[in-house]
Image (cartoon, rainbow, N blue to C red; front, side, top):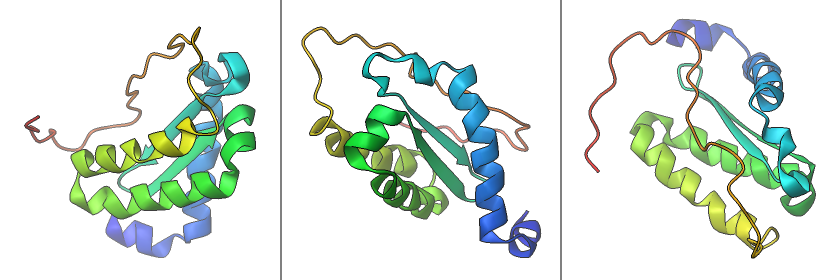
Amino acid sequence: PSVQRALTSRRSRERVLRAGARPAFYDLGVHKTTGRTGLLVCGAIRERRVALVGDVGVVGAVGQGALDQHAAALVAEIPNGLVAIGKKLRDLAPVLAKPLPKRADDVDELANAVHAVGRRRRSPRAVAS
């Protein structure tokens, strides 16, 4: 995997990730939230890429540049494992909370589930919580 990654341009890996993330955004219904505030976190761990695909409400509130910066921060945590990635992802909450505050009538419209696509090459390590 590291040889393949070294032989593939960063731009090409990013393009492949985004090409996979866009259909998932619609297939998972992320675009159907009230206020168009859905956010898809799409990660390709082996390729060391992360894309944050925000609906128009998210991109309008924080900008794609801010999402890309947070995606880069998530990528930097990949060598540290999934727990570290999760902690870094949590740092995005306050960034979104200020321009997109929770309304009194808000309901959680998405499942907040992890959807794994592709083959797992090895069994996951146990994580203590």
